[in-house]
Amino acid sequence: MFPPIERYAPDVAVVMAAVLEARRALDLDLTEPRVELFADQFGVDVSIIDDDLRRRFLEATGPTAFEVVQAIYVDDYWPRVAAMCMQLFGPVTSEQLPRIEPVELWPLLEDFMREVARLDTLDPVVTELVRLRGARQHDCRLCKSRRSLAALEAGAGDDTFAAVDHHETSDLPEATRAALALTDAMIWSPYAVPEQVADAAEEHLTPEQVVEVILDVTRNATNKIAVALGADAAAVTDGIELFTTDADGNLTVVEPPAG
Image (cartoon, rainbow, N blue to C red; front, side, top):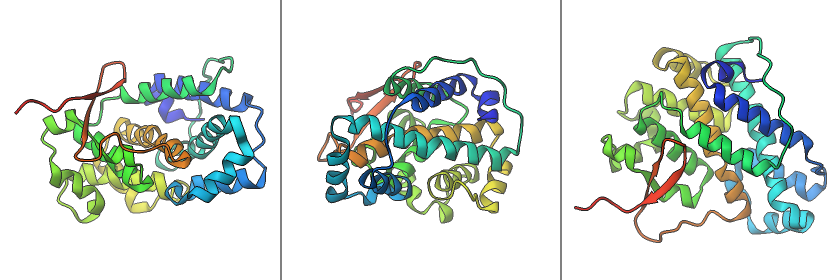
């Protein structure tokens, strides 16, 4: 299903296949009208989900709500990944990944997030700007309140972070603008990537970096689960939180450097 990922991020591809198996094994009814309406809005623009839509969804799903939203996320983003790969890399033959017996979905999604976080063909500033762009597009309060310490140490500042809101006309490097344009395509038009976006990605990014942007956007879009459920409140009311990502892909909130 994801040949370019199998080639350029094989460990992620294995986990994605496992996620898909777990999703297929779930016996969930997503055709209930309140669930369908919620899922449709989740896919189009999660930031528009309001308390009334959320309340009706929770009434329909009860104790299975979290599991249902996980399934909606996979149904939303796994086809996006496939569509983006097809448009940017063309039709190629997929290798046969090892069959994995389906297990609980959420631990596999956590494995997916950690594996993607371990990719390192993008520099820390680009990775952080891609994350922040998605946070702002999905209006995730928690994600918007955080900054990557690695990006700060690599030279990013307030002007750099602010540029994600107007990246097309910013003075960010061309490769960074290409990555952010690809981010927008993944979020808003995954089934019809603008020609200029695809051309810029081919010109300024390596195939490995293109795959990493696609996967970063997918990983970051797990924030849609929290936003959809109204569970995305920031941990700070003033300023920002700093975080680091370790070699195993785990995120840790850290104290600001002294001085």
